[in-house]
Amino acid sequence: MRDFHLPGRSAVLAQNGLCATSHPLAASVAADILKRGGNAMDAALAGAVLLGICEPQMTGIGGDCFVLYSRPGHGVQALNGSGRAPAGASAAALRAQGLETLPLGSPDAVTIPCAIDAFCRLAESEGRLGVDALLQPAIHYAEEGVPVAPRTAFDWSTSASALQGVARHHYLKDGQPLTSGDVFRAPGQAEVLRRIAKDGRDAFYSGEVAEDMVAALAALGGVHTLEDFTAASSFATQPIDGQYKSMGLTEHPPNGQGATAILLLNILKHFDISGMDPLGAERAHIEAEAAKLAYDARNRFLADPDRTARLAHMLAPETAARLAALIDTKRALQAAQPLTEAVHKDTVYITVVDKDRMAVSLIYSIFHGFGSGIASEQFGILLQNRGAGFTLEAGHPNEFGPGKQPMHTIIPAMLQQDGEVIMPFGVMGGGYQPTGHARLVSNLVDFGMDLQSAVDAPRCFADNRVLKIERGYKAEVRQKLADMGHRVMVPDTPLGGAQAIRIHASGVLEGASDPRKDGCALGY
Image 1 (cartoon, rainbow, N blue to C red):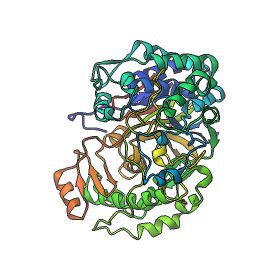
Image 2 (image 1 turned 135 degrees about the horizontal axis):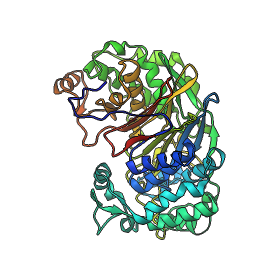
Image 3 (image 1 turned 90 degrees about the vertical axis):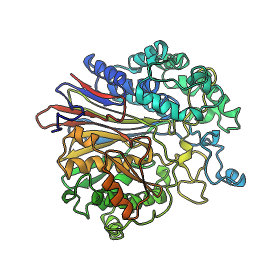
């Protein structure tokens, strides 16, 4: 239980249904959908699409998603809603230009957005109300406008420089970032959503809407074609599982990086984490060292699902044991190699549990702040730059190439106990996400924190040879870590943003929402 003398927020308790996400309007819409007879999938989809209007710097219909979902007694299912590089993609051509990475704001970094295909598929196969009903809230707010929330305004100001061309018209106000209290409207997106509500996913992937996106990319030298958009397709896949003490951890498989969280926890099993100070230097050091090794494995092995060949090796207990043996408990190792992904903080996450205890864990992103910064002229659809998750290294499993899916940082998750889902959760924050998953699970299992306290607790992250530490850590802890050889810095932006719902044996739902974001948990 938190100390009520100190600033903080209580968890939200409900019996019939609950949503936790990063914006209160989306949480409210999700709760309304549940009250109208929709199930958890209906509520999650309606809230997710609206998040693209509430937090356009983070996500939108020009992006991708991954989804885990379950019903009691039926196990966890996964849907991969990530897009592919166009058929004309060529790493060799970019290497010939002298490039070592894909430029973040170039059309080469734009993969085909697949979230809309995934949402329409899930609405039909798992929902009750139909895609038309689910898109109405987002259509309304796209037309009428959404007041910009404080954290969203902060992100807007730090990411606005990525906007280029007509995107500046659609996402700036008099050439400047919107500020807290400004009202953001997206009439072009409202029209796109109306067309999808009427005609389904084909209204997005063919015809005038697709032509608008292809034209924006072609004008900048992109090789994308209408055929690339028509071919976009989400697909069911098999979740991957790990175990941390009493808890089972279910993650989305590659091309997501969920395996990294499982490997990280497998390494941490070899240390007495529960015997350490949860906010002390010793725990931060061990977690940082384990993360360096786990992320190095990620960068070597994870890629397009058809090209990830060593997943079993990455998840094997023996692999974690060998990596744990490399950790010096008193001294920091140099990073095994620099992280190859471009670091970012831009993703939204929503989780919903309904009265029948269907649970949905959904994460949805355009990658960097405002994605590629490229928007379609007529409809103002911001296009993701997920292609930046590829490498240009010749022969690498994650090499940029035609029709391939890049390694994604976004990962939804679920905790299980005795074979039943007890907590859908996610931790936004780009590369931080596997560390965020491991930290949240450890806070619950090793230290017995209540859910909201486990979300609120200060964080640190070994990120590209720097140990980022939030201001919640004491100065003496930062100094001790520096003395151990870490390059310590306090980042301007907090690390990640978690949302979670605990399903208690009593039937009560407990929702926690990260104060690092603008959102909340709401139930009834």
